[in-house]
Length: 281
Image 1 (tube, one colour):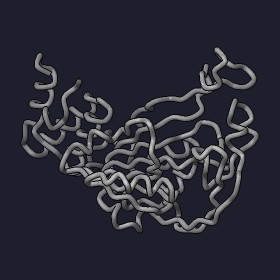
Image 2 (tube, helix red, strand yellow):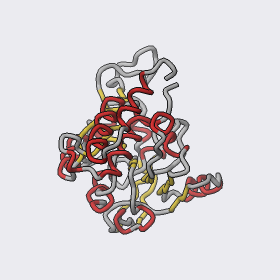
Image 3 (cartoon, one colour):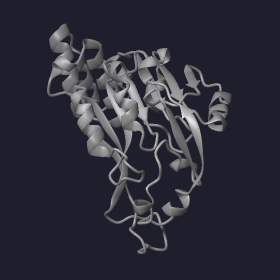
Image 4 (cartoon, helix red, strand yellow):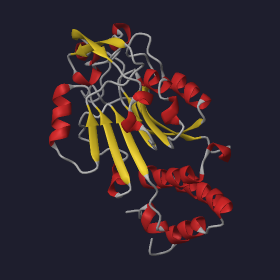
């Protein structure tokens, strides 16, 4: 197992993880390693009453949950679908869903609920976010467009994106990427890409074993590293720690530390890379 950023450098930058759409998942979240540090805190937003109660009941240290729907500050209709994972502020797009197995049944809207949303920039608990994660079924761009103040402190964004409009008028990967570029971010990686077979073909009788059609992914954006003026000294360290601990992106982490040392007269990059490549690492 690759050693942590703290083990390699002796540094533990302050991190605040903000997760929009914090419903429980069977997968370990990408940010989990950050929360091992006493300098890290977490704020999760989950408007579903059942999921919110379940999360709060865990009583996890340094974690705060809020039952708010993040959006543009206006009232919207929540489309509650047969499959909870497809429930969204956007209406399911039946013409696209019918291209895939299971999706048409999952996307059946069982009811709609009027729901108030709040802008992330208006939530005091989100101030100082360094790692922002979003998974809100097509409403990610809406949330980001009303989080401009929060984005000024954010070092990395982990966001679910679609490549086909599963919902009507849904912003897709390139729409989110274009917006984040205007806010000083650059695309870093996908982790992972998710494919599905186009109906009626099914591979090994498995409706989820895809071939070549990419449907959605988690996309990672970081502050634009082609221009280090986009970073404060603290953001250089925090971003390097995120890249190392969450994504094992040691090349970019090292480059950020080189810039940090150039500014501060430190030797962090030398210590980081030297320890990383030693036999003991």
